[in-house]
Length: 128
Image 1: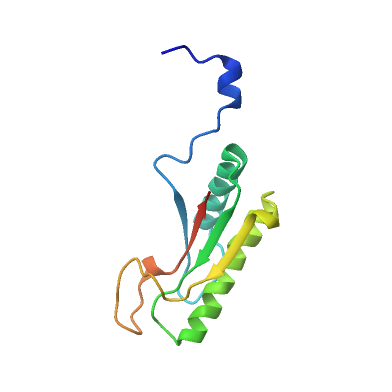
Image 2: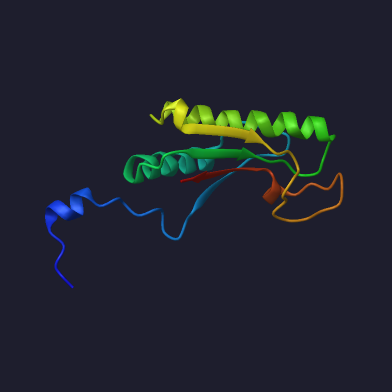
């Protein structure tokens, strides 16, 4: 194979985070406040945006199965908006972000209703 020139390397898109096609931001039970670990994930997402220039980033908020369906959708929306606001604060244009709330749909760990499950309290960031 031909050697990669410095000019070619400078114009090549940066790779995604090692093996990642998504980033997951976790939340405390009932909360939508970004933790230091969540802030670090947003830093990684912002680097991914700057380095890879994806057309869009999608922010999907989820909850565990504690609480009513409406309360979970509202909490998922607050979580998604907190992540979106954090990404905007890191320089990602708002028109390149799409946030949605999915409540207790698509659990990472399936549970019965009213069962707390930390892995299900999350926002998933994907891009294309």
